Image (spheres, rainbow, N blue to C red):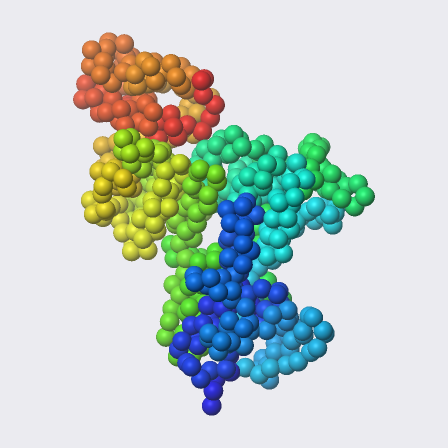
Length: 562
């Protein structure tokens, strides 16, 4: 007898589950229920539709060959019944059936299943503040939200807007609205944007963003201000009022677990459906995938929420195979790789940040490297990377990368290295593709590994900008050596009491350094390559307490003199 499979949810994980199940079994009866009118939406593409990177809305719903994935497509191409505008209202686990209602006419029905899959996604968080119901306040969670914001872009009537929340969606939405010529303010309650990054890396992103928009951190929304039921401004917690006609709320999402909870399935402490490695819930005949689930972090072993479109598809593939063949496929979890675009800047992470490593109680070493992605004669652009490894074993824990260069390539390298459980010693001689149009002879990733290996072996002693800033605040007795050329020094400098001695003149000017060779000396240059060379030279001449400012001037997140 044909196996009856029901999928609840038609965005990312649901269609992938249904399609994989069909490929595994041509005879299965597969039905997919979707509350909204659209199926298989490329939700990560919403900001780019709003921003005008493309104009045809259907591209968010199409196959690679341009066919819209609607109910007709699913039936003709895959033999899957897709019911849109249809809400599943109840799961009866004893009867093994679901109840549903057609939202277009109110008709109700029920349908039996052998295997049920929940891919109910997540819903946007909304701040519980006065005025939240005003016209002009939206999220960017649904196709309808994207349509609304695209209409605003095309009409060009709105001049001022705020984006509330400095996470991935907030960043991408801000870029989209900026491209529409709207004056923007980003508001973030926490001390930094992009909380998956460590503070210094996030601060560098913030510094870049401030050239495009007003950025306010450590301040939240107290009230939305309105006239005639329309938004006219936002009042912040410190009393500041910001005039605006549009507010996009992007303060994260929460798993949509109403059906699962009412059905008595196990829910985790983070608010997501608990699943095992086969994506099976506490009911052996019910599976779940996508944003509604909690999954394992492969580095810490702890449960996390990871609402990413790529993971939803991977999880759905596992579920589709398991509902047909039994629990033969495994989803191991996530190391939480993420990336976003901010104008010309790339921003991303894979694995643990320093904050997360501390939280997990892992003893680690870290380093920051600033260098171009390609040679200067090929118009190389700056990358700033932060790399973490376990102190004792050298096993890689995480990498962050930001900058104008090819961030995606760097993250792909490190994500694969983490997935393979590699150690820092495995990466220092990695055999990566090299040609000047694509990379340096020693790729940025390998150079970052070299620096961290040097640090582990005691060849390189670094200091972070935060640590240096603290020393300056404490008025510690440190000698700051800028090893750049005089012309570079005139163009830009930190202005923190440094002494300029170009690296080519350092051997002849050692007499200008502190007489006490045990005094702390901190060396740097634009990216601290010459700073490192200066430190090696000084140690060879008997100086015992020399450190290199990691990432140099380009990774300095604080104000510069000029």
